[in-house]
Length: 535
Image (cartoon, rainbow, N blue to C red; front, side, top):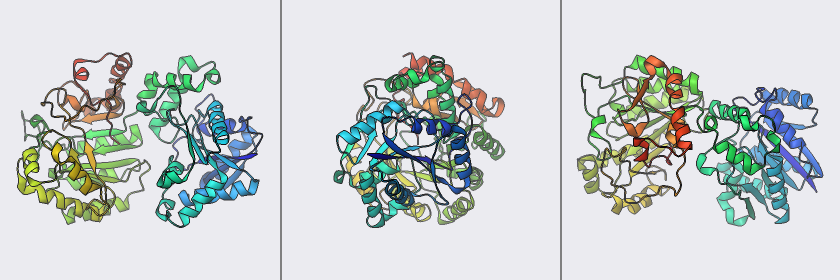
């Protein structure tokens, strides 16, 4: 039985060839892993890569003394990926394919063996592990199944075929008709999914997590002696792995709103208070975006911290500043009342002139706060029923310019729970104004600032370190940074305009360590937002 081992060397990977691990790169470690799979009697190693980095791949393989086949393309998508799965498995007479990304420095031979044996023993068509941190285990695909999937791309799933190769591309294609395939899942004894850890060198933040994990004191001497479960547990208790760089910036550009909303604290949406400005200064915003780009590399910037961002007199210029940065995506949460064709056309032009986003999201994402199915309930939440149709209609206008990037939102509360099903059924339909996109959002009390209006408690049985203090940073009009979004404008830990992002971000690390030990401050003890996450 012959096996084809495919390493996908993505040109978009941030630091795949950097010698970060005792002089070796993530790519070299992935090659070593592929070569070490001695439980496979006959194997061929193939590198699928972009033409521009073919030379780097060959040099690394030569340095390691490992024989590989290199498949190069100018354009990779799901269709070409499966075309080459079929081509190379037939070329080498391989019955199965072991597949992983080449920027994962901690691929486990133990994990690969478990997946491969399960795949063969149960005659599976596709096998994967679910519960380990990403980057520990590969996937296994039967060569005949790959051929079937290729034919499905050519016929029923052509739209899937033109998508870029994501890290879940194989599973995403299979789940389009999952009941037609024999799928096996390897489940670990320790489930790390809630920690949302990714060990690859695709982004700056993920690369920092890899560096931190490799440098962890308990792993220094005998990294390869740890079992896969032990490595997973170690990863989840390493603070510098859990908290790397902020990837979501919640930026308050406006303290004004068009109307009150019962789930947004009034203290954050008034006009000028205590002599403070109503809008963030555009110059300060530009400096902030520049620093975010330098510090995080890739991130989502939300202009939607409580106020209505479209009220900012220089709103389009703020958007243009974000869109000019390759690694940044723009999230705009709005009531929809100021959405116009002219505004959409201008932002569309800025977006088209910018480089394609290097993170997992489109350049512009829209959220429209609707929160109801009828005018009556809308009035109870937002104060005036006359704006309901205007908010709904704004979705159609936005969708015209930003297809598949517009999300009508429903914040689930006691007052609108009776309309949840109707809202979901209407907006989830493909023929809806949003094309089926929508968000059902959890209600927040902001650590007791608002009354508890949650219709149900969905928090996990056991508590993990908060996702938001690990990945989010909230910046107020004047640059002040609260401990987290839920603290609103209290508990200020620093100012990005005075101290810089790095200094402010570092101040949050002790809080992560405390939460890892089960210690929570007064604010955190009253909060149940720890398990939710933004993008």
